[in-house]
Amino acid sequence: MSKPYIYITRKLPEEVIAPLFEIADVGMWEKEEDPVPRDILKKEASRATALYTMLTEDIDKELFDLAENLKVVANLAVGYDNIDIDYATKKGVYVCNTPDVLSDTTADLVFALLMATARRVTEGAEYIKQGKWKHWSPLLMVGHDIHHKTIGIVGMGRIGEKVALRATGFEMDILYHNRRRNIEVEEGIGASFTSFDELLSTSDFIVCMAPLTSETENMFDNRAFQLMKSSAIFINAARGGVVNEEALFSALKNKEIAGAGLDVFKDEPISADHPLLAFKNVLALPHIGSATIETRYKMMELVTRNILNVLKGDSPETIVNDELLN
Ligand code: DGY
Image 1 (cartoon, helix red, strand yellow):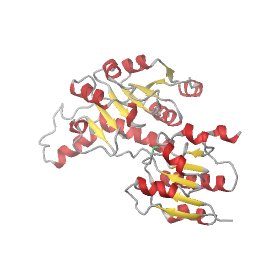
Image 2 (tube, helix red, strand yellow; image 1 turned 60 degrees about the vertical axis):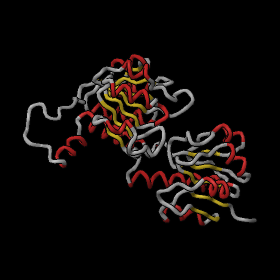
Image 3 (tube, helix red, strand yellow; image 1 turned 135 degrees about the vertical axis):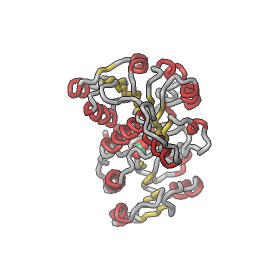
Image 4 (cartoon, protein in one colour; image 1 turned 180 degrees about the horizontal axis):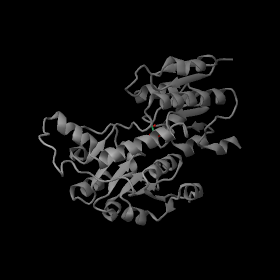
């Protein structure tokens, strides 16, 4: 019987993928930074039993139809909006993601963005490097307090909970909005469930952690930004598509909000001349929420284990379309 074939869509460290070679033939895209071109992905998918994918690839109907032997798509991300889940389920293909292992790391980055935006950290650093600092002065680079303010978290999943936990250290009032109430976070750390509109109009920091779905796409639109306080800071570390970027641009231009910290964008990479990047009060990062050496290794190892489990006939550790397990 021929061995299964696993295709990995980015060059990854050898030690992480070594276990895969024990049970399968393995192909891997040769570049670390550039995504695999679509035509190569299509060719590889057509013979693959397992795909080890990144969030940069569209795993859509066309690809599933080509991939007749495919048993599992294991994505190196907790988000899976790049994969047509319904179609995968229809085709009986497991879709796996990397929840939990990245929650603390991503919540740390949310706070880094929040603090840096509120306290103008990168702006201040640039100010010095450009030789602009002449004297200490009472209102130089004044920002906004974080402690004792109100944080509003939209999307109270695993990462949202970790953000809320960090907010307790700053003695913040914690509001959240989610599809379902999260009693643990209410009873455990005193977060209060509110409507989306109430959260927007009363929070000092609005943190978007909602996954991108047909319901959440563009949920931060003109109306949403207009409801925010003019002193509010908006943070997005979920997916760019949840925000209407033109609406965010006009909110910043018209000073309807005080700033934004963004780790994700509708189109990634965002171009250096994108109008949003021209604002001093926008801090933008290149989608690095889970990017620590420890966490990226945990994520890669989890993807490897998920593929191994499926190819050995066991259940994956973390599956998105778990209806296939019944
Ligand atoms: C995810 O996991 O979905 C992040 O966006 C990348 O770590």
